[in-house]
Length: 392
Image (cartoon, rainbow, N blue to C red; front, side):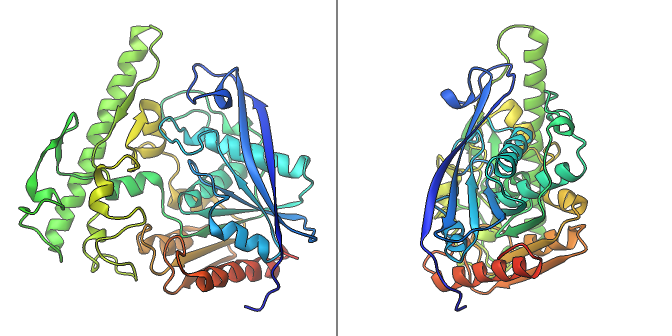
C-alpha cells in the first residue's frame, strides 16, 4: 500500500470512422453524415512511460470522473476512459454498435498511440460489455442486431485484449432490469394502475420485509413476465413498422417504474454490507419513478439489444465462458448497486485458465468516502497486472 503516487495528466482524444446508417439515432454531430465520432480521455502519470493501456468503457456513461481510473493512473498506469457513441444517453443504444466503438478505441490505441498491450477494465455495466467485446474479439459470430439490422462483428476487425478485469460488475443490463422492474404495473400506459400486493412501496401492501420466500419467487416470476410483455409489444410494433414500408423506421417509448428490487428493502436477500432502503442512485422508491431509472426511455431496437432478457447478447455469464485471456474479478463487499452473487458467478463462468477473485471488504459501489478502500482495490489491480507482465 506504499506505492508511489504520480501527478496525472489528461489528454482529450477523438476517434472517427465511417459507418453507413439507415437513420439518425443520436443527436448532433456525433452520429450524423454517415460517420461515428467518439471521444476519450487518456490519463497518464507524468513522467512514466508504458506499453500497456487500461481501457475503461461503460455502454452509456463517461468514466473520466470516476475516481478509480485516476487512482490507477496515479499509481503509474496509463488509463483510457473511452466513450461510446451514446454518451450519457442510452435511449437508442445498440450494444453491438458499442462493441464496434470499443474496437475503434482499441485500434486507435495500438495503431496511433503505440500501445502494445490492452487490458479491459469493466466497471459496473462495463463488466458485461468488456466480456461481450472480448468474446467477440476472440471468436466473433454476430452479424446482426437482435432486431435484424446489420452489425457484422465478424468483419469489424475487433482486436482482442490481453486481459479482462471486472470490478463492481454485474451480469448484464438486461439481468439488472429484470431484477429491478416493478411487477405491480398492470397497464404500461398508466403507471398508477398497480397491483398493491406487488408494489413494494405501497403502505397497504401486506407483504413487508423480511419477505417470505414464496412471495419473492412469485415477485420474480411477475418481473420476468412484465419484461417479456414489453418485449412482445416491441417486436410486434417493430414488425408493423417494417410491413408498412413507410419512412417511420423506429419509435421511442417510456417504461415506468423500473427500480423495485426486493434486495434494496430486505437486507436478508443476497446479504452484503449495503444499507437497507438505499441504492447506488439514492432512495429506491424515488428512483423507481425518476428520470434516470433503467430503461426509462428506449427505442424499439435498443430494448431488444440491451434490455430484453431473451434477446440481448450481452450476457455476462455466456460471454465470460467464451474468453480465454487472464481474468480478474473484484467484488465490492458493500456494493449498493450490484447484487452480491454476481461477481462470484462471473469468475466461476470465465473460460480463462488464469482467473482470480477478490473481495474488497466494506467497499460500496463508488467507494464514496472510502479512499483507503479505493487505493486497496487499485493496488490489487496493479499487483495482478505486474504478475502477468502487464504493468511496469
